[in-house]
Length: 383
Ligand SMILES: [Fe+2]
Image 1 (cartoon, rainbow, N blue to C red):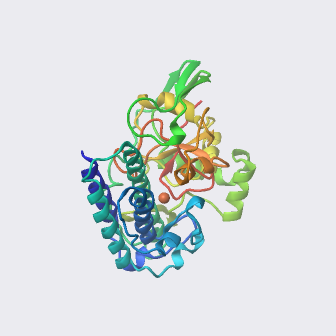
Image 2: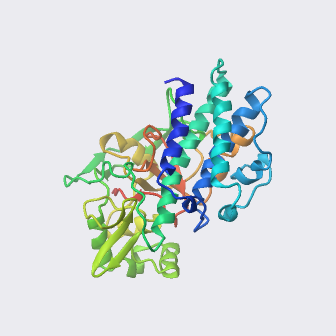
Image 3: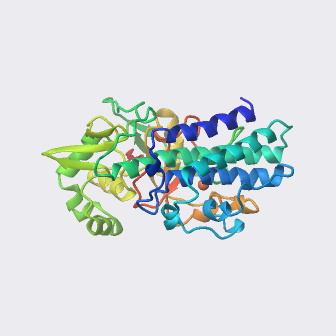
């Protein structure tokens, strides 16, 4: 597919995700981590305008100079911006104005992509496409949070989350022998800078489950008092449970003696065969501890990933998000993309039902703070 076609397709998909929304759904920011959908639409557009059109499109006229303040996310190099907690306070630009901004930038981008494309532009295009895809996943998870925390539990309805939902009953622990293994991205194709620096690691003998932990299994942990026994938890995790009165995964509700969970298709009885989702690292760790097993490291996961199906849940690993040997930040604002977040976060591997097709790969490193659970996160055990 040409860059022109790729651009058009990716940008259209973002807008398709928003099709079921009502105007008010676009605006709210119930917690700091959940951005208003309209902000995602504007921010991804700002990304192409700032990093591709301004440096590469001749005589490009910025759509609205004030948007830089509104839609810059975290790029210190680019200047001041609205603070993250205040994204939900922006009643203007309104949703229509943001769609007009998208159309203006799309027209300029598609014009730019009709000319021969330099390798420098190609590199930024790939980042722009992958950036937009990351925001497509965030859009879905943020929409789920917005609708799922509305007492009316509105239905969003998405084909994205319907696929590949069941775990298999044929569970096995897949064994690997100790030795030196290669980790990190190699060869052709796009990857983020945090995957580069292919290097050797020494792994001890280990085994890893062929399947994710299911809702039914997780329910057993709950019914056996998992949330009430400090011995399964890190001190920080136990504080988190107590301070936030956590008794179940996010979106679970105990109604008339049964567990229900909010899905993008509305409130549904918890399906015991579906892989558990929306749990924090603290919960993943406590579950593994209760089960007498542990979480894999990101290196074990990467070595083993060709032997099992992945892509339904982002899988918490036991690894801290750290630079690989030889990691280099790119010069300029793009260097702020990954490197500055390499502190106090855990790596998640795989992809989820909300990840756009073709976005992830075995070396992909996602990362979140250990208490966060609004993404489609899950558990794979190791020993
Ligand atoms: Fe972004």
